[in-house]
Image (cartoon, rainbow, N blue to C red; front, top):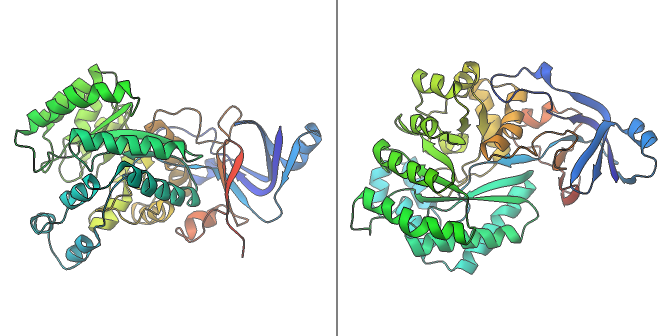
Length: 413
């Protein structure tokens, strides 16, 4: 067993609800705390002095500086496997060009598709691994990674194999998701329905046989797939035993209703969810995942996180790190900005980045510092947890532990 500490504060996030609003007063904060681990599991948590007395034979991992310990962040929605760069698109958008105008000039998602197709599996593995290293430095100990930037059978599978290879090279947990239904590719001659049928018939069996992904996603939107097409696809994915998630209500409503119908793990985006959609989500077990990075990148409204929480939803927060609409990829900065605009409590932000995000990935063993949970946690160089959100991403983790092993340490100034 190993005893890590002392920490000026440990913010456990335990005993908090999965759904609805949370006041900061509900947070459990252990002063001068320690955490006891056995292999990859938390076995005790309390004051450092008490734990040292009760477990005198524990191996000590001493923390010399003022540090605050919280659960490791969980980023439940990323697109960090891709080729190319969309900086030109961003510049055009700043100059007033619309998404359609950018696409017509050769930019947009199709630019990423062509670059991704032209990149080898080995090169995709390398770039994805580099992006995962950045996630680790930001305090993320579990991350979802989607395909969806190749949009044909051969290269979508290449992406997923690259994600699988990258997952084997990193200490953190990577959850792959198949997003072949991101949009119908320009070079597919058939209808949207025919493209989805090809994914179902040609790709789904290989996902299972090679264990490339157990999650399926679809972008339900006017520019991608209709509600009716999404209905067909999600039904087939459910028949094949996949876990489901949906890109929903980003520009128009409709996708969240499908997510609820098929009992998806999450409905992600929700910038255009109205009162009806919010009430329906609150009365379901679907996690409402909000993506402030996309709103910042596109210069559009944020998902109505405050309304979702007040209605009783389980609201998670994810980065949506991708080369087009959310290139920043800084999870904590995005979440802190969302808190400012949507008037979220610090407890709600931290919950959305940890155990509520874990629910969006169907993971019950992480996201809170509690006996029996995975020993995934991060520390910040401060004596007060509120500085983590207050500094809006400028206060970065100084240490990251995965399965009780320190995997990153930032030299203190």
